[in-house]
Image (tube, rainbow, N blue to C red):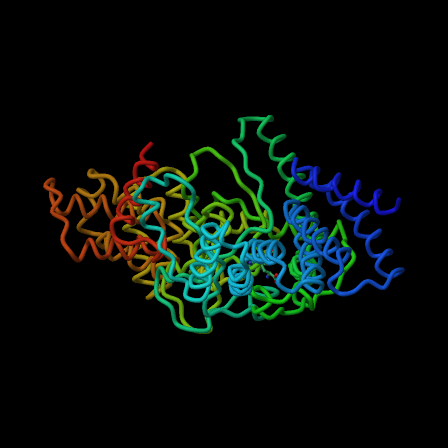
Length: 531
Ligand SMILES: C[S@@+](CC[C@H](N)C(=O)[O-])C[C@H]1O[C@@H](n2cnc3c(N)ncnc32)[C@H](O)[C@@H]1O
C-alpha cells in the first residue's frame, strides 16, 4: 500500500518536471524523498537496492528542478547526496556540471562533464556533452588568461547572441584607499587598454524608459525589482550573500573589513560561507551605494539599442572608488562588465572610475560628488582647490559663463598655466576641467583661424588630458576632426596619427577589440555623437 502511494507521488513529481512546473515538482519530490528515507531507515536496505536507486534519481530530478529555479546551492546539495548513493549517476553528473558552469566554476564543471562522458548513456547525448566540455574549456582558458576577443561580434554588427564571456580577475588586490574605505589596486604595471577584470552581474534590470513622470515611475519599479532580485540571489547562495554583505553601505567605510580578492574568483569554494541572517535595510543601503547604471559616464553598452536603461549590481566593481583623474572604464555586454585601463596604470596605483563626468570644472564636480554622498578626495580635486582662489581663474570661469569667445578663453588659460608654472599631469587636469572651451575651439574653423597659432596643437592637448584623466570618446572625436583638417580635405591622415587614434580607442574600448573592430566602433560612436 505504502509502495503504491510512493509510486503515485513519484510519477506526479516526474509529470510536473516534464511540464516545467519546477516549484511544484520540487515539493512533490521532497515528499517522495522523505518517504524514501523513512523506508530505508526502517528496512535497512542494501546499498544497491531498488529503493536507494529511486532515491538517487529523485534527488537528481529535484536538483534539476531547483537549478531551473536558479536555486543552485540547494541543487548542488541534492547532486552531492545523489552522488553519494551512486557516484557515477549519469543524470546527476550532467546536472552538477551544468550548475557549476552557471556558477562560472569552469574547471570543476569540466571534471563532471568528463565523468559523464565515460557513461554508456553518453553516446545518446554525445554532441551536447561535448558542447558543454568545449564551452568549459574555452571559458576556463578565458578566465585564466583574460584573452577575450570581441572583434568578430562587433564586426558582424553585434548580430546573434552576445559573445560567451567568462569571469576573469587580472593583477589586482583590494586594499585600504586614501580616498575612503577600501579600493581596488593594480599589483603590476599595465598599459592603456589592458583588461583588468570581467565580472557577471548579481542582478540587472533593463527597460526602455518612457519620458517624463512615466519614466520616473518605471525607474522606481525597476529599483524595486532589482532589490527583489538581489535579495533572491542572496537567499539562494551563502557565498553571494556573504560577498554582498562585504560591500559598503556608505557609513563608517574606514571600519570595514578588507576582503581578499580571491573570494571573488569564480572558483572560490561555497562551503566556507555561513548562513547569515538577511538584513533588508542593509541590502537596500548597499544597493544605493553600489548599484551602477550601465550607460553612464566612463561606460559603454555594446549590442543594445539606444534609449534603453539598465541598472545592476556587480560585486568586484563595487570596490572601485571614483576619481576625477580616473584610469579605468567599463564596457557592458549582456550581464557582464568588462573593466579595462583607460590610461597606463602603475603597480600599486588605485584603479578608479569616473562616477560622473570629469570633463567639467571643479565646482560642477563638487556638486556631482555631493549628490553621490561624498566629498571627492582625489589628487586632481586637491590640486584644483588650491588654484580656485586665484582671481584670474575666477575671471576665466566668469568669461566662460558669459559666453566669451572660446578660443580667447583657451588662450588665457594656457597663458595662466605658464605663469603659475603648472606642468605635466596638472596641465591635463586643468585642460580636462575646461574641456568645454577646448573642444569648441578645436572644433570650429573660425576660432582656429583666429587662435590656432596662439594655443597648443590639438594632439598636445589631447595627449596631456588622456595621460591625466584617461581616454574619452569626445576627446577622441575632436582629435580625429582636428587631424582630418590638418591633413587637408583629402583625408591625408598619417600612420602616427592613426596609431595615436588607435591608442585612444584602446583606452575607450580596451584591447579586446582588434584594429578593424576598433575602427567600426569609433565610426559608430562618432555617428552617434553627431546625431
Ligand atoms: C562603490 S563604493 C566604493 C568602495 C568603497 N570605498 C568601499 O570601501 O567599499 C562607493 C563609496 O566609496 C566612497 N568613495 C568613492 N569614491 C570616493 C572619492 N573619490 N572620495 C571619497 N570617497 C569616495 C564613497 O563613500 C562612496 O559612497
